[in-house]
Structures are given as structure tokens and as C-alpha cells.
Amino acid sequence: MDFDEVITKRRSIREYAPGRSISEQQLEKLFDQVRLTPSARNLQQWEFIIVRDPENKKKLRECANNQKHVEDASAVIIAVGTKNLVLRAEMTTKDFAAKEALLAKLKDVSPEKAKVWAIQNVSLAVMSLTLAAANMGLSSCILAAFDPEKVRIEFGIPADYEPVLLVTLGYQSKPAPERPMKLGFDDIIHFEKFGKKP
Ligand SMILES: Cc1cc2nc3c(=O)[nH]c(=O)nc-3n(C[C@H](O)[C@H](O)[C@H](O)COP(=O)(O)O)c2cc1C
Image (tube, rainbow, N blue to C red; front, side, top):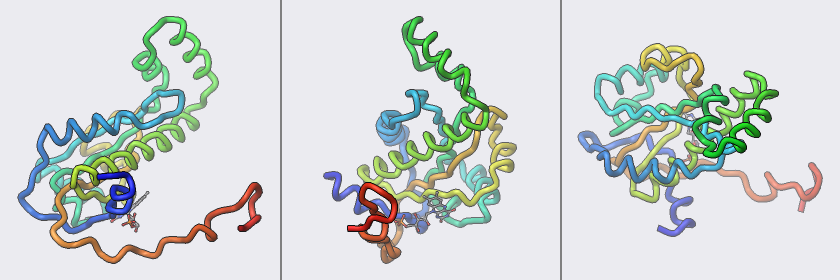
């Protein structure tokens, strides 16, 4: 698919064909693209829990305001972000000098800021995930309406990680619903200064 088609085809899909599975191979291809997402200081704060077991999808649905598509999807991804920037710096820099320089810069990053970075970076990775999925013929839906603390307990997410978003993945059972209203160029664009319209 070319990019115009991918970005147009990606829709939030909530009706999934039952009994369809997503293979390890598909997941590997998908996440091999997701991992190329840009991130603050290249810290790649994202990690993903792939939930495919029906019992676990049921548990996740209960954590997500009982949203049915969480249970119906072939897989649900719990996208989490680490707030441990030092450990991430160790993992993402190869040579000693680069690591020391990065660690020095990270010293002034507050825990609040590390959490904001986690949310920003994981959100971008999730956007990559939905586009990469669309390109592979998979449908998806991002979800923020869930109880993060309940998800943390049920899925064993450590305290230094933030559950950021869920993403359903699967094969849609119906054509996508009509696209909801999207704002136009003039609604969202300002030239040079806020308020200066075309
Ligand atoms: C941050 C975020 C949170 C969302 N949360 C939910 C959700 O909890 N449940 C859901 O069904 N859809 C959720 N959506 C999907 C939106 O409803 C959807 O993107 C929007 O209606 C536009 O439709 P489209 O994605 O087909 O363009 C969320 C989307 C985003 C980006």
C-alpha cells in the first residue's frame, strides 16, 4: 500500500471477526516497524504486552469499561512506558562516552517529566502501530478509557512503568463505519502566529 492509502484506510474498528488469530510472524513484522518510531533522546521508552489468551482479553475488557471490542479482537496490545531513563540510556547507547554524556543530560529530568516523555513516546509508537497494522491489512482501535491501576495489577506491570494506551488488533467483520467529522485545514492551521488564518 502507498502511504496515502494507509493513512486513509486506518480507522478505529470495533467489530472484529471471531476466531481469527494473529501469528508470531505478523507480530514480528509489525513491531519491527514500530521500533523505528522517533523518541526523546532516542530512549525508546515503549514496551508492549501482547494479550491473545481469551481469559486475559476478558480480564482486560473488565479493566476497560467493559468495551466489547477488547474481548473480540484477535489481540490487544497494552502499550507501557518506562520512567527509568537511566536504565534506558544504558540500553540505547553503545559507546561509553555517549552513554556518559546522555546520563549527564538525564540527571535534570524530573520523575514528572520522565512520565510525560513516556506518554509522548508511547503514544507516537502506538500511532506507528496502527499505521503499520493498516498496511498489513489488520484493523485496530486505540483505547485510553481503561483503569491503569487495575491493568497494572492484573498484568503485573512494575511501578516504574506507566500503562499508556491499549490497542485492539484484528480482522474487521463489517465495513468501517462512516468516518466521523474531521476538522478542515482552516480550522486547525495558523500561519506564523496563533490566530493568523489563511
Ligand atoms: C488517545 C485516544 C483514546 C481513545 N480511546 C478510545 C476508547 O477508549 N475506546 C474506543 O472505542 N475508541 C477510542 N479511541 C478511538 C477514537 O474514538 C477515534 O480515533 C475517533 O473517533 C476518530 O475515528 P477514526 O480513528 O476512525 O478516525 C481513542 C483514540 C485516541 C487517539
